[in-house]
Length: 117
Figure: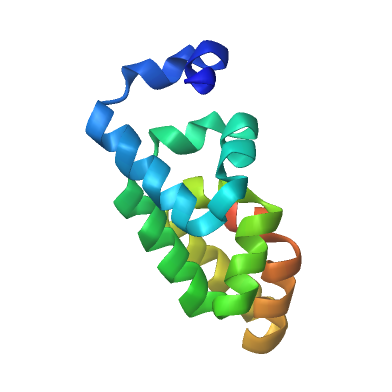
């Protein structure tokens, strides 16, 4: 794979885990998965199950369309932890209210990667 030449760190992952992560990314991005991986190879190091859990949390918090848009805008949101996504939404919702929080987070999904305290 071309990705291995450019990002040898993926060799430290187990083969089955790599295949599952690749399949999960293909489900989310379709043909764009190669481009996303080229820009963000760290996503291959994430477990497929963890990415699905984050995607489900995003759907719960933002709604399906906004979650898909957030993932397209900022693929590294998939590298977040489910707890961090929920805490970030809670923090923003306490400031803006639930409806405006969902809109704000879909527009600026990098907020979801920040650690809420």
